[in-house]
Image (cartoon, rainbow, N blue to C red; front, side, top):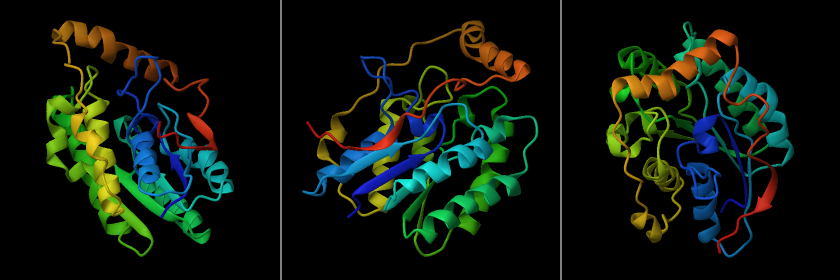
Length: 249
Protein backbone atom coordinates (compact mmCIF):
# COMPACT_ATOMS: atom_id res chain seq x y z
CA UNK A 1 0.00 0.00 0.00
CA UNK A 2 1.10 3.57 -0.64
CA UNK A 3 1.65 5.73 2.43
CA UNK A 4 3.49 8.75 0.94
CA UNK A 5 1.71 10.16 -2.11
CA UNK A 6 3.02 13.21 -3.99
CA UNK A 7 1.37 14.81 -7.04
CA UNK A 8 2.96 17.05 -9.70
CA UNK A 9 1.21 19.00 -12.43
CA UNK A 10 -0.87 21.97 -13.55
CA UNK A 11 -4.53 22.99 -13.15
CA UNK A 12 -5.70 19.43 -13.83
CA UNK A 13 -3.83 18.11 -10.79
CA UNK A 14 -4.55 21.23 -8.74
CA UNK A 15 -8.26 20.49 -9.18
CA UNK A 16 -9.49 23.57 -11.05
CA UNK A 17 -13.14 23.12 -12.00
CA UNK A 18 -13.95 21.18 -8.81
CA UNK A 19 -14.53 24.22 -6.61
CA UNK A 20 -15.78 23.76 -3.06
CA UNK A 21 -18.16 26.01 -1.12
CA UNK A 22 -15.21 27.61 0.71
CA UNK A 23 -13.60 28.67 -2.58
CA UNK A 24 -10.89 26.00 -2.49
CA UNK A 25 -10.47 23.44 -5.25
CA UNK A 26 -10.48 19.69 -4.66
CA UNK A 27 -9.82 17.58 -7.77
CA UNK A 28 -8.86 14.03 -8.66
CA UNK A 29 -5.52 13.98 -6.80
CA UNK A 30 -7.22 14.90 -3.51
CA UNK A 31 -9.74 12.14 -4.16
CA UNK A 32 -6.99 9.61 -4.90
CA UNK A 33 -5.37 10.53 -1.59
CA UNK A 34 -8.70 9.94 0.16
CA UNK A 35 -9.08 6.60 -1.59
CA UNK A 36 -5.59 5.51 -0.55
CA UNK A 37 -6.24 6.54 3.05
CA UNK A 38 -9.59 4.72 3.14
CA UNK A 39 -7.94 1.52 1.96
CA UNK A 40 -5.35 1.23 4.74
CA UNK A 41 -5.41 1.51 8.54
CA UNK A 42 -2.03 3.28 8.50
CA UNK A 43 -1.75 7.07 8.13
CA UNK A 44 -1.31 8.29 4.54
CA UNK A 45 0.64 11.46 3.80
CA UNK A 46 -0.23 13.55 0.75
CA UNK A 47 1.45 16.51 -0.95
CA UNK A 48 0.47 18.31 -4.16
CA UNK A 49 2.84 20.70 -5.95
CA UNK A 50 0.47 21.54 -8.81
CA UNK A 51 0.02 25.14 -10.00
CA UNK A 52 -2.49 26.10 -12.67
CA UNK A 53 -1.27 27.41 -16.02
CA UNK A 54 2.15 25.76 -15.86
CA UNK A 55 3.91 24.45 -18.94
CA UNK A 56 5.66 21.12 -18.53
CA UNK A 57 9.16 22.63 -18.52
CA UNK A 58 8.52 24.72 -15.39
CA UNK A 59 6.62 21.82 -13.79
CA UNK A 60 9.71 19.63 -14.06
CA UNK A 61 12.17 22.40 -13.17
CA UNK A 62 10.23 23.64 -10.13
CA UNK A 63 8.35 20.63 -8.80
CA UNK A 64 10.42 17.48 -9.39
CA UNK A 65 13.19 17.90 -6.83
CA UNK A 66 10.92 19.20 -4.03
CA UNK A 67 8.56 16.30 -4.76
CA UNK A 68 11.31 13.68 -4.60
CA UNK A 69 12.71 15.26 -1.43
CA UNK A 70 9.53 14.08 0.31
CA UNK A 71 10.50 10.47 -0.53
CA UNK A 72 7.16 9.40 -2.00
CA UNK A 73 6.35 5.77 -2.58
CA UNK A 74 3.74 6.96 -5.13
CA UNK A 75 4.24 9.89 -7.51
CA UNK A 76 1.69 11.09 -10.06
CA UNK A 77 2.67 13.34 -12.95
CA UNK A 78 0.49 15.08 -15.52
CA UNK A 79 1.70 17.75 -17.91
CA UNK A 80 1.72 18.91 -21.50
CA UNK A 81 -1.88 20.09 -21.70
CA UNK A 82 -0.86 23.73 -21.61
CA UNK A 83 1.99 23.04 -24.03
CA UNK A 84 -0.29 21.68 -26.76
CA UNK A 85 -2.44 24.82 -26.50
CA UNK A 86 0.48 27.07 -27.47
CA UNK A 87 1.04 28.10 -31.12
CA UNK A 88 3.94 25.67 -31.48
CA UNK A 89 4.81 22.52 -29.59
CA UNK A 90 7.26 19.67 -30.04
CA UNK A 91 5.64 16.47 -28.81
CA UNK A 92 9.03 14.78 -28.52
CA UNK A 93 10.15 17.59 -26.15
CA UNK A 94 7.11 17.00 -23.94
CA UNK A 95 7.74 13.24 -23.82
CA UNK A 96 11.45 13.78 -23.04
CA UNK A 97 10.49 15.92 -20.03
CA UNK A 98 8.04 13.28 -18.81
CA UNK A 99 10.76 10.66 -19.15
CA UNK A 100 13.01 12.80 -16.93
CA UNK A 101 10.37 12.66 -14.22
CA UNK A 102 9.86 8.92 -14.58
CA UNK A 103 13.58 8.15 -14.55
CA UNK A 104 14.29 10.36 -11.52
CA UNK A 105 11.34 9.01 -9.55
CA UNK A 106 12.07 5.38 -10.34
CA UNK A 107 15.67 5.88 -9.24
CA UNK A 108 14.30 6.57 -5.75
CA UNK A 109 12.08 3.47 -5.81
CA UNK A 110 8.81 5.38 -6.20
CA UNK A 111 5.89 3.98 -8.13
CA UNK A 112 5.01 6.39 -10.92
CA UNK A 113 1.52 7.00 -12.27
CA UNK A 114 1.54 8.88 -15.56
CA UNK A 115 -1.82 10.39 -16.46
CA UNK A 116 -3.05 11.86 -19.70
CA UNK A 117 -5.65 14.59 -19.48
CA UNK A 118 -9.23 13.99 -20.55
CA UNK A 119 -10.19 15.16 -24.04
CA UNK A 120 -12.08 18.51 -24.08
CA UNK A 121 -11.76 19.11 -27.82
CA UNK A 122 -15.38 18.29 -28.70
CA UNK A 123 -16.58 21.45 -26.91
CA UNK A 124 -13.69 23.89 -27.47
CA UNK A 125 -13.08 26.56 -30.10
CA UNK A 126 -10.40 25.20 -32.47
CA UNK A 127 -11.07 21.81 -30.94
CA UNK A 128 -9.81 19.96 -34.01
CA UNK A 129 -6.28 21.28 -33.43
CA UNK A 130 -6.42 20.22 -29.78
CA UNK A 131 -7.68 16.80 -30.89
CA UNK A 132 -4.77 16.28 -33.30
CA UNK A 133 -2.11 17.37 -30.83
CA UNK A 134 -3.69 15.46 -27.97
CA UNK A 135 -3.83 12.31 -30.08
CA UNK A 136 -0.14 12.66 -30.93
CA UNK A 137 0.84 13.21 -27.29
CA UNK A 138 -1.31 10.30 -26.09
CA UNK A 139 0.14 7.98 -28.74
CA UNK A 140 3.70 8.99 -27.80
CA UNK A 141 3.01 8.41 -24.10
CA UNK A 142 1.53 4.97 -24.76
CA UNK A 143 4.69 4.03 -26.66
CA UNK A 144 7.13 5.48 -24.14
CA UNK A 145 5.74 4.51 -20.76
CA UNK A 146 4.90 0.84 -20.98
CA UNK A 147 7.59 -0.20 -18.53
CA UNK A 148 7.86 -1.83 -15.10
CA UNK A 149 7.09 0.49 -12.21
CA UNK A 150 5.03 2.90 -14.32
CA UNK A 151 1.25 2.92 -14.52
CA UNK A 152 -0.25 4.82 -17.46
CA UNK A 153 -3.79 6.08 -16.82
CA UNK A 154 -5.06 6.93 -20.29
CA UNK A 155 -7.84 9.44 -19.64
CA UNK A 156 -7.51 10.72 -23.21
CA UNK A 157 -8.84 7.35 -24.40
CA UNK A 158 -11.75 7.41 -21.92
CA UNK A 159 -14.47 8.49 -24.35
CA UNK A 160 -17.02 8.76 -21.53
CA UNK A 161 -15.08 11.77 -20.24
CA UNK A 162 -15.71 13.62 -23.50
CA UNK A 163 -19.37 14.17 -22.58
CA UNK A 164 -20.36 17.69 -21.56
CA UNK A 165 -21.63 16.60 -18.14
CA UNK A 166 -18.04 16.10 -16.96
CA UNK A 167 -16.85 19.64 -17.81
CA UNK A 168 -17.10 23.00 -16.09
CA UNK A 169 -18.41 26.20 -17.67
CA UNK A 170 -15.05 27.10 -19.22
CA UNK A 171 -15.16 23.83 -21.24
CA UNK A 172 -11.47 23.27 -20.50
CA UNK A 173 -11.46 22.06 -16.89
CA UNK A 174 -13.46 19.14 -15.56
CA UNK A 175 -16.11 19.57 -12.89
CA UNK A 176 -16.56 17.47 -9.72
CA UNK A 177 -18.03 14.58 -11.70
CA UNK A 178 -15.12 14.55 -14.14
CA UNK A 179 -12.48 14.71 -11.43
CA UNK A 180 -14.21 11.86 -9.61
CA UNK A 181 -14.15 9.67 -12.70
CA UNK A 182 -10.43 10.37 -13.21
CA UNK A 183 -9.72 9.53 -9.56
CA UNK A 184 -11.63 6.28 -10.05
CA UNK A 185 -9.52 5.53 -13.13
CA UNK A 186 -6.34 6.01 -11.08
CA UNK A 187 -7.44 3.89 -8.12
CA UNK A 188 -8.66 1.15 -10.44
CA UNK A 189 -5.27 1.10 -12.18
CA UNK A 190 -3.56 0.80 -8.79
CA UNK A 191 -6.01 -1.94 -7.73
CA UNK A 192 -7.20 0.17 -4.81
CA UNK A 193 -10.92 0.01 -3.88
CA UNK A 194 -13.04 2.94 -5.07
CA UNK A 195 -15.06 4.41 -2.17
CA UNK A 196 -18.74 3.62 -2.64
CA UNK A 197 -19.72 7.16 -1.58
CA UNK A 198 -18.25 8.47 -4.84
CA UNK A 199 -21.27 7.14 -6.68
CA UNK A 200 -23.28 9.86 -4.96
CA UNK A 201 -21.16 12.75 -6.24
CA UNK A 202 -23.01 14.93 -8.71
CA UNK A 203 -21.76 17.95 -10.61
CA UNK A 204 -23.53 21.29 -10.52
CA UNK A 205 -25.49 21.91 -13.68
CA UNK A 206 -23.41 23.91 -16.15
CA UNK A 207 -25.18 27.11 -17.03
CA UNK A 208 -26.01 27.76 -20.66
CA UNK A 209 -24.11 30.62 -22.28
CA UNK A 210 -24.28 32.45 -25.54
CA UNK A 211 -21.17 32.27 -27.69
CA UNK A 212 -20.44 35.94 -26.99
CA UNK A 213 -20.70 35.46 -23.23
CA UNK A 214 -18.42 32.41 -23.31
CA UNK A 215 -15.75 34.26 -25.29
CA UNK A 216 -16.02 37.31 -23.03
CA UNK A 217 -15.72 35.34 -19.79
CA UNK A 218 -13.18 32.69 -20.73
CA UNK A 219 -11.57 32.95 -24.17
CA UNK A 220 -10.63 36.64 -24.29
CA UNK A 221 -8.96 36.63 -20.84
CA UNK A 222 -6.98 33.55 -21.91
CA UNK A 223 -5.85 35.31 -25.10
CA UNK A 224 -4.93 38.40 -23.10
CA UNK A 225 -2.68 36.36 -20.82
CA UNK A 226 -0.97 34.74 -23.78
CA UNK A 227 -0.31 38.08 -25.49
CA UNK A 228 1.11 39.60 -22.31
CA UNK A 229 3.15 36.54 -21.35
CA UNK A 230 1.19 36.02 -18.14
CA UNK A 231 -0.24 32.82 -16.68
CA UNK A 232 -3.24 32.11 -14.47
CA UNK A 233 -0.78 30.61 -11.99
CA UNK A 234 1.55 33.60 -11.70
CA UNK A 235 2.23 34.29 -8.05
CA UNK A 236 0.35 31.22 -6.83
CA UNK A 237 2.10 28.84 -4.43
CA UNK A 238 1.95 25.06 -4.84
CA UNK A 239 -1.35 23.64 -3.64
CA UNK A 240 -0.02 21.49 -0.76
CA UNK A 241 3.80 21.51 -0.76
CA UNK A 242 4.29 19.55 2.46
CA UNK A 243 3.42 15.95 3.21
CA UNK A 244 0.32 16.18 5.42
CA UNK A 245 -1.90 13.42 6.81
CA UNK A 246 -5.06 12.72 4.82
CA UNK A 247 -8.13 13.58 6.87
CA UNK A 248 -10.96 11.09 6.36
CA UNK A 249 -13.41 12.84 8.68
